[in-house]
Image 1 (tube, one colour):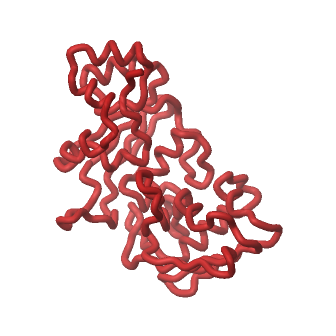
Image 2 (cartoon, one colour):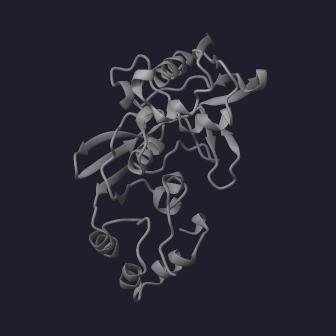
Amino acid sequence: MKRLQVLPAALLLGCFSAFAQGGGELRFCLRSEPKTFNPLLVEDESSETIRYLTGGVLLRINRITQEIQPELASEWKVSEGGKRIRFKLREGLKYSDGTPFSSADVAYTMEQLMDPGLHSSTGDAFRSGDGKVVTQALSPTTVEITFSAPVANLVKLFDTVAILSAKSPQKEMAALGPFYVAERKAGSYILLKRNPYYWKKDAAGRQLPYLDAVRIDIEQNPEIEAMRYKRGELHLINTVSPAIFEKISVNDTSVRDAGASTDTEQL
């Protein structure tokens, strides 16, 4: 069965490198409105896309190799059989509004995440016993989290915990990821702009991301989405039915090649 290459949020930053290195705006659609912009309350796919593109996490699971990679934390150590984890944080990082990042932000995030009143499914994954989760900011760049009982797959769970700022006036909208939410219109679109303080650089020392912006339109109708892709109004499309694929791939070798390719570096 033919279909377009599926492009989850985790691959967006690695795709269209030739396009992105010239700046500009990437455009694609979500089929539904994100239910929340609070990264601690994410449960749906649309909200997860926004969290992935804007949120900064201590550790990241590589979606291709499944290896754990350092992000905001440069080092970590698990002890007491999975009851305690200590992170060494990168120095000099800032949120999208210029607010400095420190261990106090990790402590604040964990306090919010584990608050029973928040009803966070992300936080539920860390609940290993009846005792309280204790987070200590040992220094501006060192933080230690202790659980009442061992937590299964403890390190990997931090891949979904976007670190909030304890001091930014923008609260959860202050971003440590490559983009921040600049504009949004309910039921219509979300505009993400390049985070001017994003800490990552490429091999040549150029600050990432290459893109200036990402515009995400809300479009429930797959026929309209496919038509806009065919007209060049969208740069990527996630997944389509075989019938729609045939319509938009007629006399378009690039679409047919994308349907057969699994190498994102070729996109």
